[in-house]
Length: 263
Image (cartoon, rainbow, N blue to C red; front, side):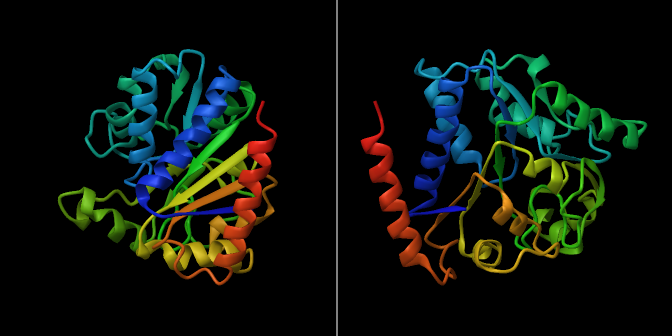
């Protein structure tokens, strides 16, 4: 697990956008796993800027989103389909047929989840998976106690997640109680994972993810077993890490190696 500590949330967004851009440029038909929420917004704005400047072409890219609320239509302003359309899809040259978000209105949710897994496999698997993290250490909607081998499925949301997400709704009672989510096992099959976190409210979850034991109570901790994960945090989100100096030393060595091996 590579740990990158940046000075600001803006620097986190820049680092992550650069990594995604590298994948798209070197592998034009790559498959991206995408996330929603406030944390990746800066990354999406940077990707849009790069596209508008002509240096990033999404025309052959395929995307799969991590999750979606059950019961919200794609036109609902808090659905993740709406979020992605508003914050990325409509601003770049992704084709509608190449973007995939779970259907929160599916009549047979169990079958829909199986079909979502099949669609990922048919696309060749996810190359780069973008991840945020909840204050309780969950990735996607894999709440504490989720199986670390889980697949795309229906998941009940915890009170903490409902409370955290209430700021996006009229009030807490309006937050859906169920979601469709990629499982931890699905996420772990991505060829590379990028976990980003900003703000002091994520510091405890980040410390547990990186330096704590691997446990289903902190589903992000499963990424310790992933062979190619980069965790990118700002100073606030990394404030509880016990080995910050070591991570910085390793990152300097990594950057020097990349610089010397760039054609």
